[in-house]
Length: 278
Image 1 (cartoon, rainbow, N blue to C red):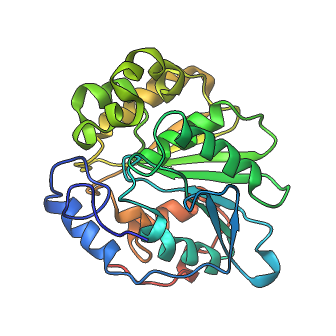
Image 2 (cartoon, one colour):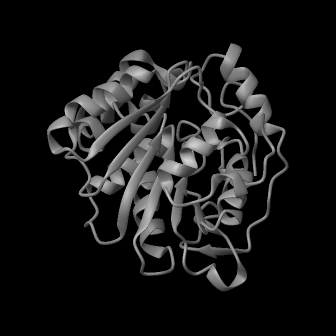
């Protein structure tokens, strides 16, 4: 599993090398050794059509959190960097299903990436409601999927630094033109509205956006725009992380990580999680 960045400097950046706070956070995240899952299930024949399960042996079929990783939908960036995070959640009593999916350059893009997310979420074992958690491009996928999902399977959505305004991301050329690569030059006009969280209805469950105010990869303003667009629903809230960049919430032991854990499950003792960060 790759741990490279789409910028060549780390993983999943905006297309320009991470600087300052983002660079320091990325270094800390990538310094963590990968953690193998307790079990891997396959939902299709492609190598990327898998879901890794983390938790006690008796609870691998009952995940409480389903995670979609970021990387601007590109093949070079897979789920490896989130395996320490998944293991830390499981150690805190929250079994995890960490989803892989086909990405641009590896058989993905539109519509394959979106088909995979739909199929993978349906294949996650267990029948109890769970939290759908997405980071960066995975946040876009989580908000998109939740907007199309009946309320039963999901108790909540938590989107961390999500690409929640695809049109703006396309205009800003985030990820060195990642939206164009995902949808194709024609697709940015024709299919983008149906995939853009900002233009879709709010999911039929509580939605929390967690976003660092110093994020240099996905602008904080995108989450502000999404929260404002869905303010009338009363189900969307934005939780800013002051003096935080793009990666810290996924490094166990950081203050941002502890905040994320509490947002995922307020009753979870975040201090039980392994402290491998700052």
